[in-house]
Image 1 (cartoon, rainbow, N blue to C red):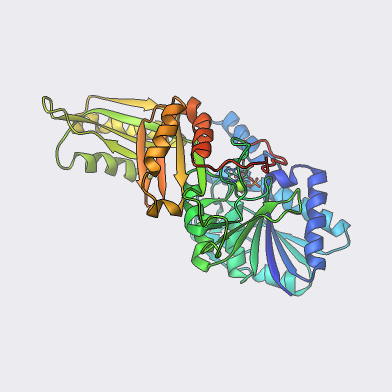
Image 2: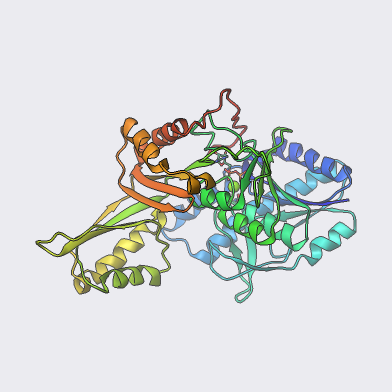
Length: 423
Ligand code: ADP
Ligand code: ASP
Ligand code: MG
């Protein structure tokens, strides 16, 4: 007998029919002789709708109350799913994140899991019941307030519980058949990957491939827990996220395993910055003090005549207004000329462990972008990733061009999007 943790995303439980379909699948896993713990997301686009509602009553909703509001979405799902399972003749008990022992820090909207104490889940399993846990939420160790783990965080709840319960596998059920070489909503010719390594998946998730939450991959890697990403709408085998590709695995020959894109960032350019020791430190300290995450940074060589340079960097769009306000505050002290803010950018990233041993990836990539008529505005690299910033309106065209240029297009269309609105 095994212990399985299954996570069902919002599109899988979007309506009553979805709940019943998922319930049948859970009962089947139980009937196979497994102990089953299920993590569930809010139905369909509920989380987005709750955020819209919060924004309709106040321009800046407070973190504590927003978390209280958003966690309600997952509570609706867990109770309905438990009822649907019970209707099939099996006992199911639902638990909030706090009841399931998900203990976090107190950073509302992006809390980190500190500890998982799943005593009540173990009790339910020992009684032969199926345990249903509300995803994406926990309770702060210090303040005892309800917290959320950030958008897409139910994946992390599932992996954290799987690690704490020493589960055999964590299955992430979503609206596509697994992890593809690119987002199937953008690249119809995307290929399903049989396996992807933690390292590659971390880069893909960080670069915007939202099929898995970044922290869930970090967690799985730390505990060496295999993740199986698959569709709740089909019986197909999905993608295994593992430490290493197996011998002869699908990625042996490929240089690039995936292409990710991200529309959630904005670019800030500080124009006419004095090119002196300590200036960059002053600027980025001010941004760091406000807890704003910076992604790419580019600084040009200063013009010889003026000794001035420009610095550009990217931040999440949601932090854009805050970041520019902070810069304006230090403008006099630092002595730069002006600030430009641009939120019509997109980020395109190539990821692949094969990059380490293959020169010429950048040249092929940039040639494909030139041919697609796309202008590259910023570039950053890691050992197994190359990212560029371009116009947001050029982004999807660029993803498809890169996918073709690296020979990733499938001969026959295998990417099916079963549900979801892609919101
Ligand atoms: P869920 O609600 O099940 O958590 P998400 O919307 O968070 O689902 O994640 C699934 C979506 O991720 C897919 O519908 C797809 O559009 C998107 N996606 C982005 N990149 C990829 C990729 N490389 N492989 C598969 N799906 C991807
Ligand atoms: N419902 C939350 C969200 O939409 C968490 C999740 O689905 O993983 O972000
Ligand atoms: Mg998700």
